[in-house]
Image 1 (cartoon, rainbow, N blue to C red):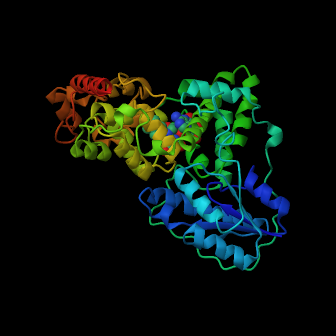
Image 2 (tube, rainbow, N blue to C red):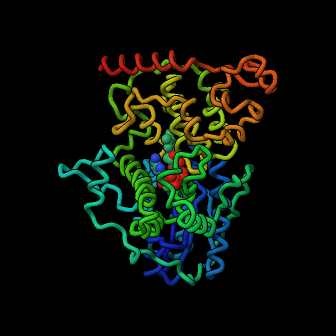
Image 3 (tube, protein in one colour):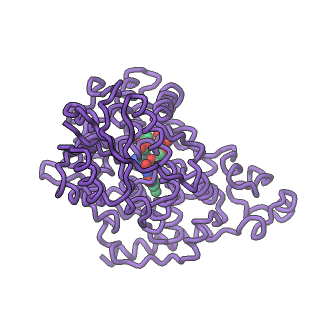
Length: 465
Ligand code: FAD
């Protein structure tokens, strides 16, 4: 039998349930990647993610070749490409990892109309739709989701599938070249399964035990930096779960391991939430925010995007985002709170910009993070929780090195003024070579009054309901 293994967001050979399922049937295997114009050039596409994806496809192809196989690449709409490849190869079955995002579900339904498509779990720890309240409803609140999740058997190391040492032959088929990207892959993320696995090992050995203490560091040094690998499935979340869960029995590492596993569950929660409520990608989960016009201006949005708000923590984060395609979770929460609350710009503008720029940009996590930050989600930060960017900097970048890395114009600003440089007396500005309003922007808002305006607006929207 010939089976097509349709690779989508599971660019790995280790613990790949779709691949393993295909191998139980296949005498010939067609590892196929479809260059889908709707994803690569559509409104939600990202040059930066494409760069990472293309490089990761090259390394997947190399890993396949080492095992006697190769990647077949075809460009076009999947509902046209799949029937063609099935016909040319004589395949009787197509197997792929399930993907719960709204586009993927529409795509897979369209493909399944013309080829025998079998979807296999693997992008989440538990099948999407499997965690439900006794009423049958999916959970909207994280703590309830988490409790229900732990009532079911948790993934076990025995479930983890090794990478197959050899793969069946590929039938004679034409393949297109993997495109070259005009953008370089961000240096922070080497795009291969091996790099993902090494980073996991490094984090388990060096970072996990102190994760609960260091995860909020604004430079990201306290977290795993694995998100792009999970995003494209270069690393199995089930395997990562089991690897970290081993540390729960070690007194020195248990608190860190618990905190990290919780983050994997937040990922899980948002994936399940988006699968249950695809409309949350486009509209606020809380009904009172659905038809409101957010008062923030386009100019405010532009200054936020360009990292010119005059608040160093916000600007450093936005410049890191545009330069590296990544920022820490703490930085994401601060800039999202800043845009949606202090500037009162519609969270969907921020979500769209993040999705264009992030290497790990993922609809479920991003919409979840934005709705949480803006206070419009089902289980969100309360509207009156507004991050103070000055205090956040003091706490989470205490020696200021992260801010200085991204804002060289503040290089000589004394530490005491670093997070609020507008407070510098003029002679200090001159000495530091940083005149406010000239070398670095004056603050776009005054924090206390912007906060008062936000509280009033949020209250009025809630009362109008
Ligand atoms: P770690 O702290 O090491 O966590 C391990 C993994 O758990 C991460 O790689 C990620 O897969 C998952 N994870 C951790 N925190 C969260 C979370 N809050 N929600 C969902 N998954 C989580 N994450 C994305 O992967 N893609 C996005 O597009 C995205 N957009 C976000 C937007 C906003 C406004 C906010 C507040 C958060 C967003 N996140 C997103 C979640 C989180 O910020 C990143 O996953 C995390 O910063 C990645 O760094 P890490 O790999 O070092 O995480």
